[in-house]
Length: 573
Image (cartoon, rainbow, N blue to C red; front, side, top):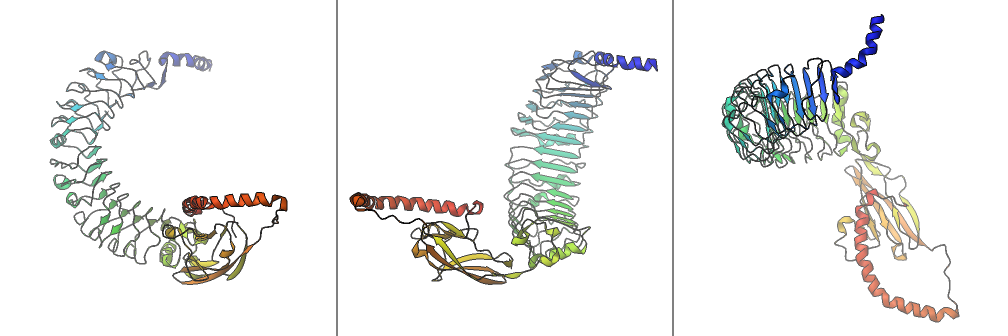
């Protein structure tokens, strides 16, 4: 017991001896921030060393004399610019090397000599300009090579990947590459996952035979319009992503693989429509993502041949209608994402054959929760534990913002609009500006509103602002209210608010009457008559000029009032 207490008292001293200043150490692991050289003085052999934000210019073999037991080495986010040939000659235990965001400019055949057991190498965001001369020749055990974000890389030669016989994953990205030999991939017989990012090319050259490749990702080729015959030489490709490019249509020529199960074409904003034979050659497709592709039209059953489709993502497009034929053969479909489109409803029968559907996402659409959508609510209610609807109602007014799944089926109904009070009189003080609301007491879907005067002439709206010959005294605002700019006697009269939807219409009549201001009008006495007369003459001379300026400003101000009426708080009548 006494020996245990003594050892506890001496523990802090022992920690200080094991770990150099500015480092953090724990059981063979050390992290030293802002190091100027590879630290020494560790009492225990290290297996993992991290040097973030370093200030080391170069590495040589002598730097690693005391670190031959390392299995993981991370030197990131710093000034390292040179790796001397043979610097890793004695690092046979190293399995993972991370040199992310350093200033390394060149790698040669002997740069990584000695790393015979290395399985992971990260050279992302470096200053490497050329890959040639078999720079990875000695990395026989390497499984993953990360060359992302090397935007100073100009050339990838045919012998760039010689020696990487066991490489399974390769990530490569450069916005400035000028020459890229597709034949370089012939040296990668075990490659399963290839990601090519940020290339500036408009088309993809032909790949060599790559029988082991299962996953190909082409991302952020912002000029890419023609992927070509991608899958011809990749017979067992299982997943293909061509994202954030400039595709003008579905690349039918690239989709010729019976093994392809996952296809992602997200963020190609100029595709715009889907047609019958777009996916004919990928009959075993199970996951399809077409998010942010600019889709506005779906023609004649584009998924006719994709009977095994399980997940379909059409989110963030411009679709207004999901034709009944779209999914009529998708018997295996389980998830449908049509969020953030322009849907207001879904037609009955749109999902009639998707009997395994468990999830539909309508988030971000202006969904009308009325009788036209009752069939979808019935579908959800049939098995509420396994079926899920995501999204909120945009109308009717009574359910705006409410989750679709949370509303009882009985409220999905269509009724004509009606007013409990059909006639009302509104007295408005002279020269006052008011907004008169017209809100029906019921009606689903939400009724549209139209105002007219006693001669059955429609009150101008925002759409009429350029066509009216002169500035009127009242407007219909986008929210359906009537705006009276300045009450005058000539405005007195009968005005009708007509509320209508597909079920019918209802009218409410407003009798507008002007009333005198509360303040009495002061009559001038004889002593001020001449002064008043002079004042009135000056007003008469200035009125034509002022009137013209007033008209120009008023047309501009009315437009501002109308366009911003939804967000303005008014004194309503």
